[in-house]
Length: 275
Image 1 (cartoon, one colour):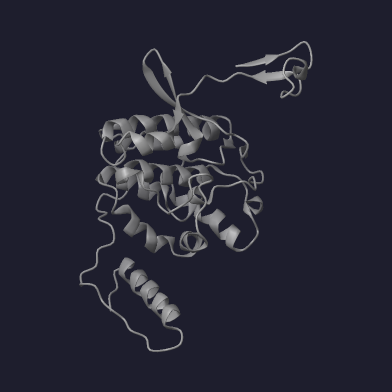
Image 2: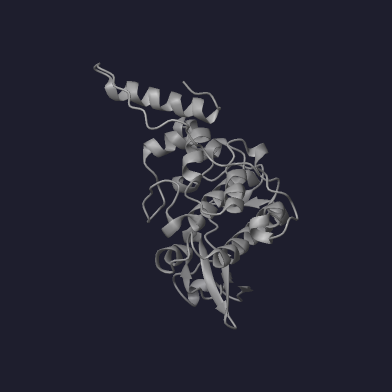
């Protein structure tokens, strides 16, 4: 709800500015707290589906109806409200929200950004160099879906809890090696239909992600049944036919050479080519 005052709001409370006051429903806690204490992540499918349904419904409203991106989708920015004994999760913290096709906000939580934003950060262009589109919220929501479905609520990348920022090496993985890295990560999702939705929402290219959030709500993981088919029905993740292989490089650049061999092997494995 919002109210227009007859006088400057600072006369009522010095912390307020202007003539308009937003009054929000009191929330009980944020989703980070639920992930830490409720023990539902990766276990209680029914609770996860309810939570994710609220998240996707909020993003549908922002993107499909208002033509805005939320811009900072992560567990900390969804809060639980209780009304008549019923729980609902609602989006908060809209300071990064912008209209579609305008510049993205410079504010971002690198633990929940899309591959294209990661590349912009590595190139030191910043998110502002990218036009806002629903695909950014879609990818971040896929990361949140992964965390809800991963046992004990572990995130895709290790990140601090204050601002959800990742280490530089993780940013490189997201920007340059995501098509390989994601397959190993998705092995931590226990349900095939949830993996399917994760994989779809976490596609490297925005055009390969779901076209809108209404489509996400129709996915079998959220809707049940077969309103739409699984996107990757035969997907089993990255599996290697050989046992673990060890490579030794006797040079002054052993670590660098090892990283190159590791990346090459994983890339060939993902393509179905083995050496």
